[in-house]
Amino acid sequence: QVQLQESGPGLVKPSETLSLTCTVSGGSISTYYWSWIRQPPGKGLEWIGYTYNSGSTNYNPSLKSRVTISVDMSNNQFSLKLNSVTAADTAVYYCARGHYYMDVWGKGTTATVSS
Amino acid sequence: DIQMTQSPSSLSASVGDRVTITCRASQSITSYLNWYQQKPGKAPKLLIYAASSLQSGVPSRFSGSGSGTDFTLTISSLQPEDFATYYCQQTYRAPPITFGQGTRLEI
Image (tube, rainbow over all chains, first blue to last red; front, side, top):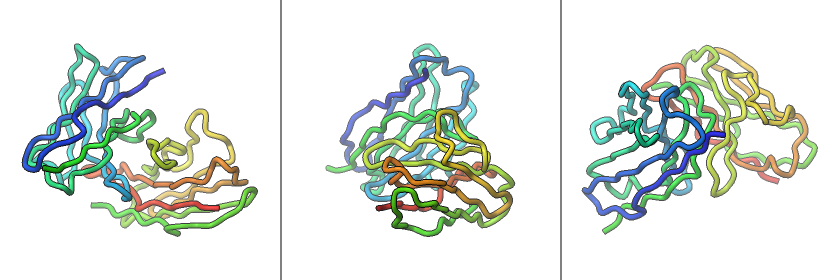
């Protein structure tokens, strides 16, 4: 059974880069699309983007200038980098499998932007 | 962007009730519509994909219908564990994939 686990620093300073990793266990990362979604405190879900093993990516236009999603096949991981963060980027960040629908999710990791 | 609008935003119901949540897209998304359930402090869980296909392991009291711009999620007989927030999601035209604002189902 595939499981996903997000990891990364819980606190990021304004203007710096938020870096998160999602480790895929119980299955290969090579045969699916992989997505990142976030949820600000008390708010709804926002899609950030997705990637495929070929390195192809698709990003939310509202974040595209600041986002990079990449795959590390050798470690069965994919990652999210969001640069120039502000308080508005404070959220729970989820990784998930799929792009037409997301059928497996990580538990989420909270990232707080604060000095 | 395709806007997804759910109604109602919140709903009070009782165990055993039949409940319907509606999701409307700002343009046709054919059947590229998914439903998720989220409980406090937990990740969303996929319930329905492609408008009406029940995800494996999801109880049959959940069902989805619709196509084009109008969709519904129905819970035939509410159970205590069904009290949660429900989100619709369109994946017809990306970027961006968009979610509805959520419907909070309360006792």
